[in-house]
Image (cartoon, rainbow, N blue to C red):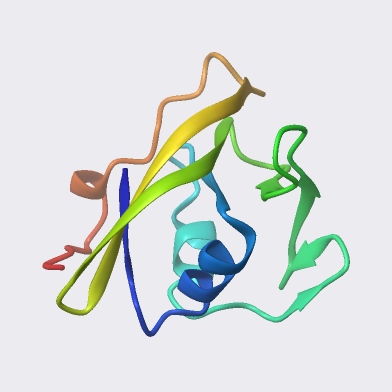
Length: 114
């Protein structure tokens, strides 16, 4: 499951498509995370300066320069406050760099209070 703020651009995309992707960033990829604090301009195959490809299971966008990813189909959703909790079933996953360590929130100067 994943909670997404209702006013975000990605919320509308998940509702419309019924699918989502989770791109797992590596410990040295803070710049990618920061680029998505606001939705980067999207064009065919790119979000800003970052390339993506459609996922094999749902077509959800998978960043090509991250060490791992998963994609899922939404099976249910719960509306609470300013977020929607999407319950989803993983339909596909991949690892591009098995040796990579993930970027953890605790390794950044950021925090998320929901």
